Image (cartoon, rainbow, N blue to C red; front, side, top):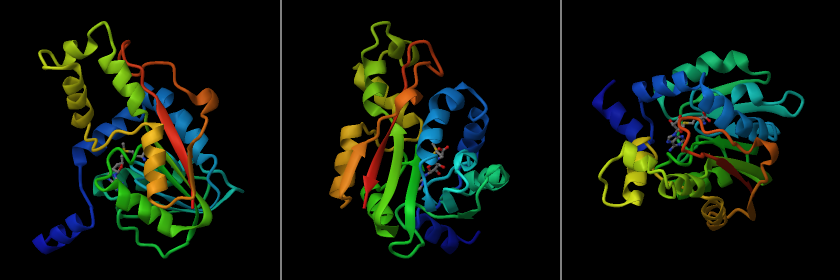
Length: 243
Ligand SMILES: C[S@@+](CC[C@H](N)C(=O)[O-])C[C@H]1O[C@@H](n2cnc3c(N)ncnc32)[C@H](O)[C@@H]1O
């Protein structure tokens, strides 16, 4: 890859994280996927309809959840070359036609008012410029189209770490000056760039011009098992934003 190509790829937000992709792929056969993520995928992806845009498709774990008869076609985007390799292999799990394109949320290669639905699961915690990403999503949605944006629930995450009277944080990040600093270290080590709760994400969607944005009730999908330790209580949430 020439230097100028790689510089232009960087400008477009394109990446190649081989190790993260391999780890993420390995995790997808574990408890974190079945308990933490599968209920969110079933709920959010199952509601997508018409011409759908998926943002940050990762290794393609959502593909199997798109409903034929309801979804006409999916344009799945992902900025990372290594993730895309796994996603390509997962295309055969889909029951609807899916096209894969390398692109970041902040620069979507689609015309205005193209899509009926947008899906982004566990992506916005990693997006460098979330305001630009949400503006792009709004731009490519048809009027009345719906974006469903799912993220780890930052409030629960914080409560479970910092409020843990058993000192779980101290056991994994000993000697940090405050529990909050130790928690931030764990959160950002996972490659995250921003933490959201429902209130923050709905505010951000409204600021980016969506006419309505609210947290969607998540019924029985609410997670109660702790995927990686007996101390942690993780949750996901998602917001429905209408153009
Ligand atoms: C935790 S993974 C989630 C993947 C997939 N959505 C899922 O639910 O399994 C986060 C994904 O967001 C992608 N990502 C990071 N920055 C992005 C950006 N600016 N725009 C779109 N996707 C991005 C990463 O490459 C990665 O595939």
